[in-house]
Image (cartoon, rainbow over the protein chains, first blue to last red):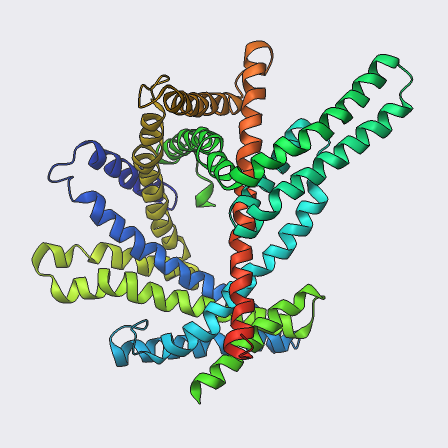
Amino acid sequence: MKREVPIAITFISGVLLVIAFFIPHEPFGSLEQRFNDWYIIVSGFALILGIDSLLLHHWNKVSRRSKDWFHSLSLIIAFFVTLIWGFYSGIKTGHFLSAQSTFRQYFYMYVFVPLQATMFSLLAFFIASAAYRAFRADRFEAALLLFSAGIVMLGRVPLGNAVAPYMVGLVFLIFAYLLYSDGRKEVDPTRRYLKIGGAVLSLILIYPVGWFFLHYTAQTAGWIMNIPQLAAKRGIFVGIALGGIAMSLRIILGIEKTYLR
Amino acid sequence: MAQVFWTWVAAFLTLAIFSFLYKDNPFYKFAEHIYVGSSAAFWFVYLWYFDIKPKLIDGWRYNTGFEKYILIIPAVLSIFMLMRFIRPLAWLSRWAIAFTVGMAAGLGITAALQGYLVPQIQATFLPLWVSKGSFWHSLGISINNFVLVLGTIVTIFYFYFSKEHKGTLGALSRAGIVFIMVAFGASFGYTVMARISLLIGRVYFLIHDWLHIV
């Protein structure tokens, strides 16, 4: 009873949705929308479980005077102040996010948005330092990653467009120097001349490549986003969709039961 | 006056979060905990006003007959979800979880078919030679279409793990990794730019709204 009923509920709800998809007529026609609404309602109540767990964890820290208990207390106070203020504004103005509500005017605009935006903007620094450590153009694939990331970053802003030819020129100059210094140490004459030739070619290419990036950085960034990036994304999406369908079938048919643990 | 007070609150919270760039400190921890606590409450209120109230409470108040009484099912399942708090009846919450899992699985199939699989495959059926305008214009569109089709196919081959990536399959998967690397790089660059624009927004708030320098 405790295992069979949930498996049956999963099977019936999953299968009915699939039937509603293939037979969009009554009585199945409205089923998808109805089930979707029910899903939103029931899964919404799962948030209460999460909030309970969060508050309990921090209340335990406060009651035991654990390390940083003061911060846990501030979390609990912030939770209840926001909750009471949100519902108060909602009851007073009809909706908690209406233009007249003080919740929107003050809490949302001056607490929630700044906190969220600043927290995510911090990632700009960490992502940059992670890129500095991870982006080593020691393999062809890694160089491709670095190249496309660099072009997209430079091509999306006017300043990036302006500095792109100089940056690319500098990269070619460094590349030429590395090839030349490597070539001088080379014992094999063929490899030595190839490397020195590569260095000369890099120097020659500085001007045409710089000219190209002076005029077409934004277009190149757009092309990377719209063609190769889109192609790979499509392949990944197709894979995700197939994997998702396989996993959903396993759940509906009762093969996958880990959610019952 | 209220505007000034709340601008100072926002500036304090912004600087408290930025202080983490130096090192973990009590100001950052305070702002972080405020963020977590207020976010949990915000999303609860949001859920109430956007989902539970219009779909369940108002549905019960304004509907009649079948449309009204059918709402007993999600209401009962929602109460079952909260049975986790009552240990002897905790097993009832599995019914609610089973319903959401079954729904997610059913939606997983239909949404994957409708939203991803069919549209993505449909959009990839492109002509490899397009005759439109001048020769060079046609060639440009044709090359783009060819790259798009080829990139999609080789990326799918890269994720095909039922056979060892050797020979033709190996060559195709190697071509796939080229496209994947370009895509990851582009996505990375795009994400960095999004974060930078958020950062510019916060710095602008500090120097414009708070300090009135610009």
